[in-house]
Length: 508
Ligand code: MCA
Ligand code: AMP
Image (cartoon, rainbow, N blue to C red; front, side, top):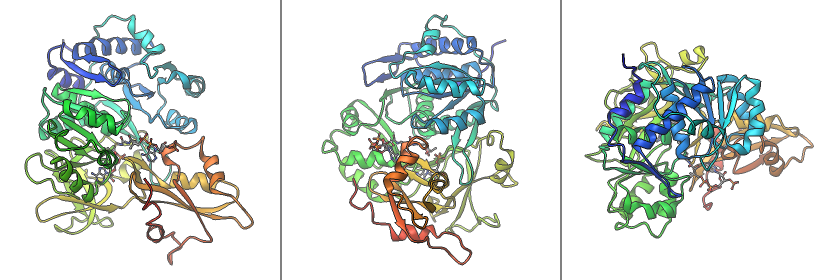
């Protein structure tokens, strides 16, 4: 009997000839589809040899390398649950994820292994390393293995990955994504955006989040296409790659920064067929400037860690600036009253709710939280507020959740407020997102000192440095005598956002 492995088989089915390139890196490495198959088999064997069993979590905090991607594929093939972690996370942040997910194996950068190993050991996990040069104890273990590997059988509902997403209250929640969540979305996006074997994607997103890992990589694997695999986003370098590429996927900050490059012209973009944006709102201003400079209309889409992609502007037809387009095939989307859950009429603003094969299986070991975020009829409550216009385009007009999106990374104010409030000298704080020309929103802390305290912005920065990932740090700290409150005593963040709306107006 041949074993089926739902997601990997789907990639396998569209695999081109083994000699075809899957990726080329910025330091001159090329990995063909044949290499991918052979080396992910070796990595899968190394996982099994380390004791990883089907359903075990493999927590991974490593730099972006081809080997990191092979490790993702190896986890799928070995039936493990891939758990990628932002390289910016600090040890206290990692400690939480390890305790919550209880991985069997942690794979980390050799430079961080000393500290991480003891955290991992405290939850009974083994540690292997994978460095920015693709070397380390995991790679050492893999390279002596035979290349063939009999994939572990995995069905559509088996877990493929857990991605942590912060909560508006309390700690991060692990979104459980099944093989079918990922396979169905990759298939739909590949067709909707017309990806084929001739495509060359500029891949300069990190691979520890949905955008770079699933939207970008899974689509390329599903199309049997190729990617130019960049360690990080460098606008000048992206411009130099445009003539060799056909598609780019990025967060709005990518497009804002590319527009600052003189080299961005119609001629340099003439070989490209598609520019896609997501993870945060793309300003109509950016969309229009891009069209003017390159002749291309950026295609904006909307998704979440919990749901993969929900909507997309059309491939053919009008890509409407300031909208996220239409529900993708197979996705049901409705606008409901946030309080009563009653569906609202077309044009009214309410909660965006979605249902479909893309929607996750729930939060890891948090059945109550999972229940609270679904309606009785299975629709997931996104926390995003929106409307559907007369032509059917979905507009996101705000967030019902207290969330900041900075450069495409989600930052939950509560987490930062808790850290700041815990400092001696701080009475209370409110963390808000303020319009920022580069990051979209800039994390901003408004702080009330305790009487007699002289705590400074630098003191606060110093105190959170080792505790919170860098991108969560406030770009500005503002001291006030008191926070504005409504009659119920609730802090009025909208008032604060209005008061400080121009503080980054001249920032770069
Ligand atoms: C880096 N810094 C940031 C951010 N990134 N601060 C706030 N927000 C950020 N996003 C910090 C750095 O630590 C540094 O601090 C300072 O800002 C300047 O760094 P810079 O060199 O400008 O940053 P960078 O390294 O160029 O990174 C900017 C970036 C990066 C390229 C926009 O943030 C990025 O790749 N973002 C993509 C995130 C993403 O993939 N999101 C998708 C999530 P200092 O100078 O003090 O050391 S998935 C998702 O949202 C859903 C499902 C979806 O729909 O896709
Ligand atoms: P995450 O949980 O990191 O996957 O972030 C998901 C959130 O990003 C969504 O709930 C939205 O608030 C936001 N988001 C993603 N794509 C877009 C978009 N195109 N426009 C506006 N917001 C977006």
